[in-house]
Length: 437
Image (cartoon, rainbow, N blue to C red; front, side, top):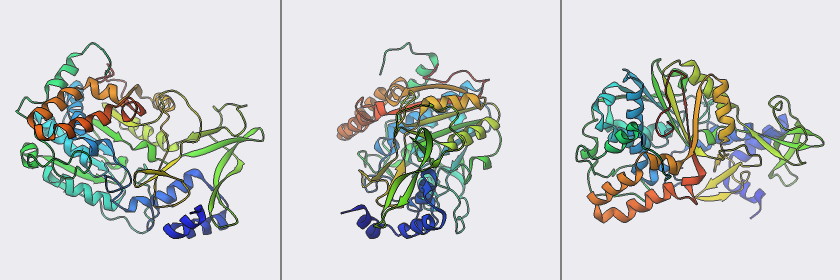
């Protein structure tokens, strides 16, 4: 099937895109991404069915509950390192189905004072996903305040800011490793965890009883709406969906890469006008056809975080290179398979690699300190992923194979373990957090 046939068959957004291109000219890549993801009627994030085995892609929290649990213990240990302030704003950007936060809160019951100090703030601009998060997290909450439904013309992408290696184990790492099992904990999550781990052994009540009725949870459209105060910010697979510009080197200069319409009515990539802004630090004579990607949303986010004051720490987990890299990384996923990014606008998940070296430079420019990145395998390994998995398998022998498979998928050196990186940004007044110390 040709791209034009796929467009007509599967995407009502095509006519809207074609009309805009005819009216305003070819679209820069960031504008194309923003429309495909955030269109108020046909945008991709208007659906809550994208995540999980029955959707288009699966994220680490859906693969294994251990991922969110380790994040929860990490947050509690970081909070202690901050001096145990209260209240503590526990913020998640782009929370998906709420699975990570649910598992994190369940694990954090090993540090009751942290839960007593925490107020949870979920940054989500998609009404369907907010509803799913509320369903997942309401049993954990003392009160919930979902953001009101967005009006027609929803103004933001789900992520738009406007809307194991050998090492010496530190005392903080030891604390994190000991946090599991101290209260006889070995239960499995059983709700909302569609993926390789869908156990039915123990009810959620056992795992959630200590936090049910005790954690305030609120929803916001933008991080700027979160009340002031000490904050821990979690962003798992958030940055990759922020729209990117693509610049292509042609005729001796950098040009915008754009989306146009060909003679058959299909969308196609093209070389647009000479680029303005953002080119100052780019190579002046790269090879013809070279592509670089710029993501302004990162700058906006880091400025927001720096503006909150101290103490603050943010944890970014995403896929992309640790060292500077160039090339076209725009990709689309549908039903767990790669597809042409232009083939089904509004019906596929559009993302691009996170350039961690550039992200660290932006953080420093904003007045923050950047730690890492390390690989996801290194991060989870140093937090005790093997020990936690072993406890789960011992407590639930019938599910041992599934537990092991899920954890291995997270730390595989040929998959997520190496491709995904973890980086922290923090206020200058704070010391490095585990495992970056």
